[in-house]
Image (tube, rainbow, N blue to C red; front, top):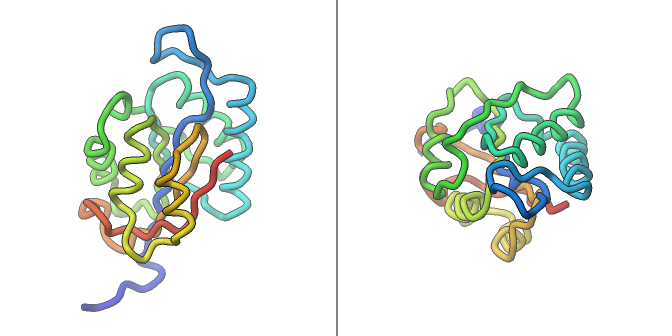
Length: 173
């Protein structure tokens, strides 16, 4: 087997939306003030770590749209235009993975912003045995609002299916 060079390795960022308010239609729940801060902090962390997405897919729900707005604001000119996808709302991990599988191979860094349980489930499904132990334990323990999982993807987006991406970082805000 030929090893992929570092330039062939892509990056996948999976994020749960920031903290949202309650007491209204689920799809239209806005972020709380704390959620605004969380999303901005997550965006600043992504920028500081150099995890800059070229493509950003987001659930079309209000709280995920607002999360991507704050992420984009923190990334500044480097932020891609988010693609809103109703197919990332109230779906299982398999649907999120199918969306990732459909991404163009020209995209080197992809970010997906969605909801529980799908974000945690797809993170645990994709994590390879050589993933960072602490990041994997943190992702397993809980995927609180505004949590971010970062993977190295050695192959094609279309071939991701399970235990084939290396979880390298996990942060909750």
